[in-house]
Image (cartoon, rainbow, N blue to C red; front, top):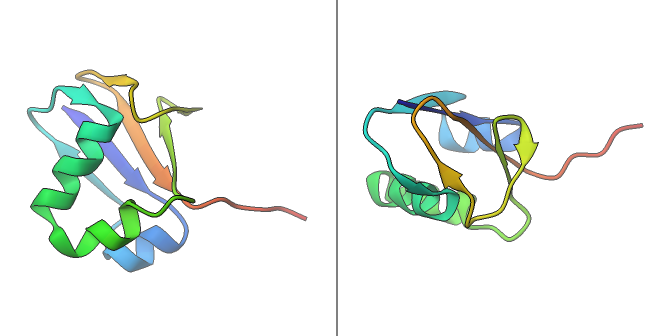
Length: 81
């Protein structure tokens, strides 16, 4: 099982903060595409160039492999002050 988290404005845009995928194997890019296929209205939000991804709480790239037990997060860039 893979835990998927959505933060900041994505949480509001997608209408949820987290979900799980029972049987997923592939890259982060594959996972994002799977989510877009399952929820077509999410595509415009998840495919934005400024959306960042993390794998097990470390910034990651679309080619990084996702395995059972991993945690994936999608989030927009944030600034602090």
